[in-house]
Image (cartoon, rainbow, N blue to C red):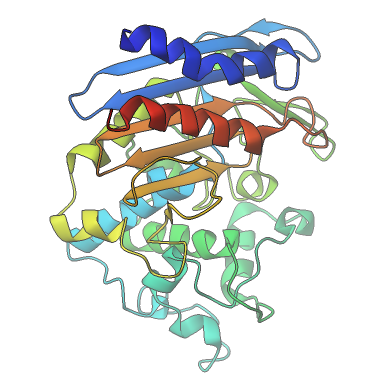
Length: 338
């Protein structure tokens, strides 16, 4: 059986989810270590307030894939360049962090702890409701005495990492260089719609869905990046092929820092979102809008499933987690030893 025919079977669960109107559209992409790409897509880029057909060159709001495709990658590049050190305190890069309390716990957090979500910082807070301009909101994040708690997956960790990148490079995140197929400012008319936002009073399309990233100017360390399915696959291929990072930093993306996490990425573990059957050297990450990327470094393949499952509302049960796991299981079966 040809790989093209087998890809149709891998895509069948996503196709069925669109047919049953559980999600408006889906794009599945697989890339091999030899550079071959295979893409399938179906559905509508927008269904409310009007219908817009989807094609696979359209831009998805990648949501928290920003954390790994942009922020983690940029931090590791700056480490390779000698501008950052993973085990340095972030206050060495942002001296005014909690500047009115030099013993504040935020000042001693390291880049490694932030990247692996091993801090006391909360998962998320509605910072956008403060009603401040982007620069004042940045200052608030730096001076806030964050409530202490157990280590959790935290947007705040990556907001701080984004601020580190801006300080060290003297360039806003929205102006940072990104590869073809990735953008912080995609064309609205060629973007996939996300949610109708009650705060902004419109369906979000071509502007970041995440409210905090929007309030920070559209790009932040935790969200704001858009990508086409081919752009996401191209980034995955960089990781598969070990391109652009030192061997040490490339290895850091798969080296466990906790039970389930490496730097930025989540690592394969029982019951995870990537499905069964992949090697132990598989890393992955999700995006709230309905996106995901997974990379099997041992077997030499990567796959992405991009959807707009939050359109027109996040408050529906789309079955996205089951869809991801089943799609991942089928991808793994394509590459399992036979």
